[in-house]
Amino acid sequence: MAYIIASNPTSENIFFDIILDATYWDQPPKLEVLVDDKSVGTYTIDQPEFHIRFRRVMSFDQSHILELRRTGKTQDQTRILDDGTFETQMLHIKTIKLDNIDLRNLIWHSSYFVPEYPEPWASEQQSQGIKLKKQVLGEMYLGHNGVWRFEFTSPIYKFLVNWAKESQ
Amino acid sequence: MIWDRDKLTTTFIPLTDDYLKRVRTEWFELSHPVVTNQQLIPMLNEWFQSTKVNDLQGWSSFPCIDITMGNTHYIESFVVRNGWDGFQVLNDEYAFYSFNGKWGTEVGNLEPNKPLIITLPHYKWAGIRPHWPDILCECEQKNIDVHIDMAWSTLSKNANIDFSHPNIQSVGMSISKYSMQWNRIGLRYSKQRTMDSITMFNHHYQPDTNSALSSCGAYAIDRIPRDYGWNTYANAYTNICKSLDLMETDLIHVVQTKPNGTAMGITNLLKNLFPESK
Image 1 (cartoon, rainbow over the protein chains, first blue to last red):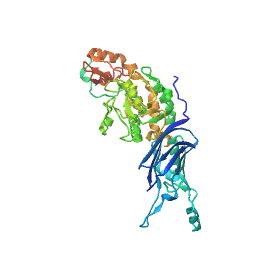
Image 2 (cartoon, rainbow over the protein chains, first blue to last red):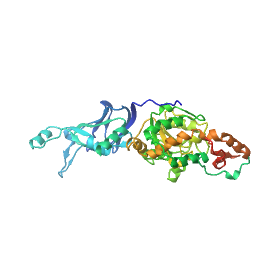
Image 3 (cartoon, one colour):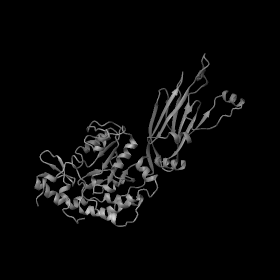
Image 4 (cartoon, helix red, strand yellow):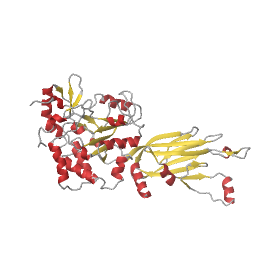
């Protein structure tokens, strides 16, 4: 008997969820979200549990990049208080979900942040012998401006299975 | 023939007879080739599609097909994926949900954007829910993904569903209602594969996982035609209904009493009418 076989899919339409928190005393941080170099939107992170949710079609079996471009941190956003403590602007990436799955540990192990170190702070650090990393693995607290990246492949279920197998 | 009305039951017993029992006995007594999950998928897919008494359309919209350990596995995988508060059911659903504290919603009051799992055909109406077109329309308007538990479809006729409807995301089917509860196995058809326990079972575990189950599934569908129930018992079913003044339904194991349409099980009257039939 003849029966119907569907053709193999070549892509999937998945949800992205990005949940963020920010601390600031003056201006909130800004963030541009990109998938595969295409901008999804620019956001001002001025509320706790700031939730960005969108959907994109991802082609199978090729590399994709989720990119978060953090901006809005200027020198005057950090101040020292009379008691010696300081206040600054900080952006926290709390949760990243792809296809409704929280990728927590996977993100911690494979995402990276490329900070833009401000001057003269960066030179001062170097003169004190402190080597600043060009890329910080698994960084979820973005104190500096810079670009956070996470590379993945689609379909997501296969990406997760492969990650689990490689982790064993 | 005189039929005993007292043999009608308030519960619904999967079809059983001597032939189906013999299928079971011979499975345990004889030796059989090993059939893996991946080998079974096209066989089972062909078997489910081979129905002549139902009108199921849109098979080509399901590129992802996975083995399940029956439809309870289909439901539980869906529940794990969405979380207990992350999906909804309608009133009069399968007891699995209410036993676990999940209560139904009326048609028309579904929550937007929250996936719905629905049993079709349904025991209460002994067929497809009468509001099925309205439900689909509501799901379209409210952006609700629909997942269909078709566990009883092997015993149904006149089920008319077009799977290509954009809100229908997955369907679960099982062979277990042919007295195969001792070896529950089925398929999940889905438009897009998500990470969940069925995906892990099919794509993460070893390829020979539960090969006893899949081998037995292949053995069973080789011996039990897809429409075995209606092909074997349709005339007897009609005779019983006429004789006992009952209403016929679209499920071979269910009749309805007059005048209220209360659903009753008829399996105990049907079984062993044709001991050697196939």
